[in-house]
Image 1: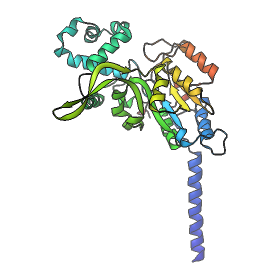
Image 2 (image 1 turned 45 degrees about the horizontal axis):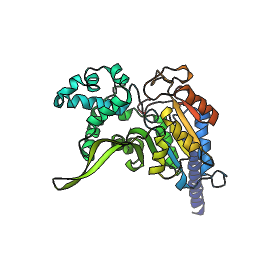
Image 3 (image 1 turned 30 degrees about the vertical axis):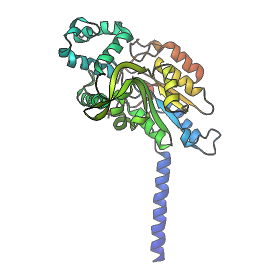
Image 4 (image 1 turned 45 degrees about the vertical axis):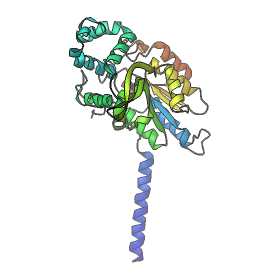
Length: 337
């Protein structure tokens, strides 16, 4: 009987040991190719989570911030929120006959994308003010959810919520498994992103920072509502990103991830802190599986998510890690096999 018990105990211990070894040796980032980018992530996480390490960071201070467009999901041929705004213009056009002769609405209705881009930021703001306001926050959330459920990307013919990067989902999960709190810090509209970030990225709405418009408390038929006003409240882009991080998080990140000139200041702000830091930029250089644009490294220029040569130069000078989509990722999208 003792012999049977001893054998069972030995077998159980062996199983536990094997499970421990597998847990320690399993690849936390299976969609990443071996190389500098992947190794930088793993070494950084080890340094800040190992208690005996001089770079150990308490869990409460393990803050990681991520841009959204072009960093977590695709931003070509245009930002997803812009595609939403264009569809909203077309849906509302019958209520606004003046739009047929007024820019930027005429360009949208004529499918004249070149004119729309030429109108610049002012034209885009006008579109947002006309299509994202004059309703309650709850009504806007319902409109966004309905659109995300129906809209399809023009190239991939899939919902935009499937156009997320599998390697970045693995990175988010890996960081959270090691005590990090992950935030989205994006130039996109905060109330456009929040309806989908939890289900898609595992990031709850209270950990999403973005551009916002002003809202006003009102009583409507005896019910309190927040009405979205046609006024800009905060632009969470470029220099606005560190401001938003300080305002809404209250801690400087120890890791930051972006993909464009709009993320430069967020990475600078993160890197200016003491101790171990990790700053990374996604370079879109894979026209076959996704898109290729820069103009850094001689890639084509773009109106959305521009990665200029000056940003590449700064990354080299400051020790930021540039992730090559083509070289560093085995898979790009979650639906790839």
